[in-house]
Image (cartoon, rainbow, N blue to C red; front, side, top):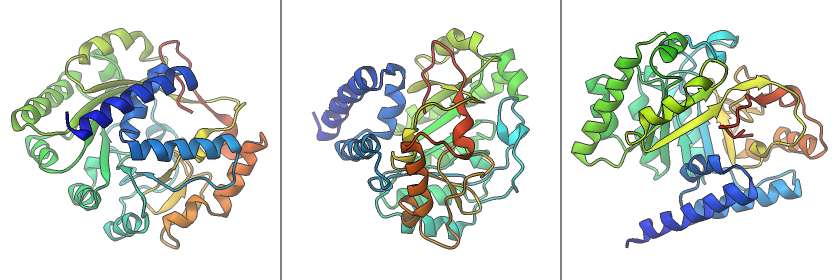
Length: 326
């Protein structure tokens, strides 16, 4: 057995145990393993958790970035803030700014090229993927899957993209009603990608996720059955909803920041309209923001049970089949 396979198996055991017995959220083990697949990443996650438990104003190093390459989208989904609530300006990340961000973040383990928008609308998306992967940083994308032409599939498989997650909200008519796109066409595109991946013996992993809320929860069983045996991972994600926060959030300690297309940085993916800007990467480096004045103040607030801005009303849709992430 190779070291990589041994490492993976050990981390699977560790993550499943942590999710079940420590976090009390066994359903999150698959998502956690994607983010923490190696001993090194596990050590960093442990250090972040210690900082969280101690309520430190500074946390261990920045290891993950979610970068919004665009907040434009070609769909208008019923539950998506980008379609229904977002008021900030639309645009595409400048490639020079993108390269600066990656160059300034010395300890990155993982980059997710997605936030609020469809990444494959960015005309230079494959150049962005290549720039990250050339630095031996793991790179992933979440997509609505509607732009997966044959040419795009070929370019995906030619790239060093590690995982591609498809957002598929519901099955059949439920999906079509929510997303305004033909479910059969989407499914055919995903199956084509899988077939071409297998023929080429590519290492790309294909994930399928569904946002769970009133419109989709009746489809949970059908959704799991529909994609079992096709996807490498199937995930249920609760929708963000307004609610009263009672406990501090791990997100601001766990080594991840969210970068919007214009270079502004927010603490997490819940801040779709940039209400809590922690810094601006057109003016400063990403590593300075991670433990900068505003992030330290935000951690102090959470430590003291005070939840400013959107933190105070951040909650997730409750369903017994789905574990809250934050």
